[in-house]
Length: 355
Image (cartoon, rainbow, N blue to C red; front, top):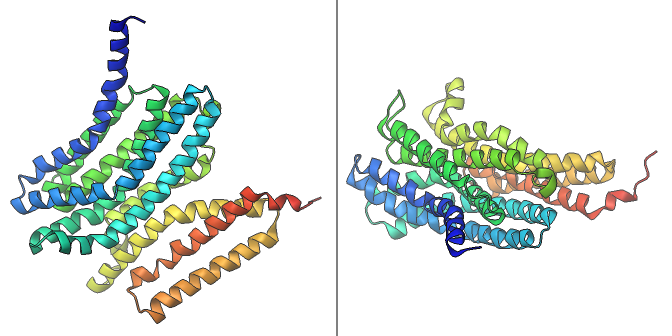
């Protein structure tokens, strides 16, 4: 290949990657432009909030780099099924780490704000942003994982429209929720966070659909656990409403102000727990489907004891807030998911002879 032809190929592959790598900076730029028209406090808070958010993205993005290296190696070896297997395993790992990062950021955010920010107004604005923006970690990391896969396969052109979807969604949602347009409340920092999370979700959905429809899934064996992915994607809109606007659900019951606040926090915990409950239920159904009813009964008993025990410790022994008591739900289903997955993969159910 001639030097000029090789140069054109390099640019054709690299230009979309450059745009994709600049996507997070683009979100920050859009938020900065909008919040500069709100106030100096919000502008300063955004700088601190974005720095803390990126800190919790370090581990997921490091795993994404690993996905790109290993899938590119398998693609170079012309082993398409190995590419799919590597991506599937890496994607699940990244998603699990992102859930942990989301929970950690929401818990650490109030503490970190007191360490890094001296002004109460700026600190409150930083925490407001991070409490909502934390929900975008998983979707942002998933988009980067898709980008890593597409780079490995040399199919980078789709990253250009994906970046356009990201930026356009952030502009539209940011304009609506930061300034209170189209009947929405003017939320300032929280509006910027909603815009960022919405943009990450839109880009993630766009890339998911592209990989599912445009790449030969039978050849690469992508989404072998598509039942789990599909179930989560169907539930995502309801989860996001519960996370970002739980008052919409609770308003139907006309609760008092105190009940509304506590109920909103609990609803957010339950909504986020669905990301664990759904795959847990699917893998538990797989155990039951093998006909190993004794194992299914044992797992169900363990899950029940875990849930009751965790709730008792949180509510009675430690007298934690009600939203932390609800953490017994994801904790017990995480146990169910771990045991069910391990049981199915171990092949112990094959000992049964069903006539």
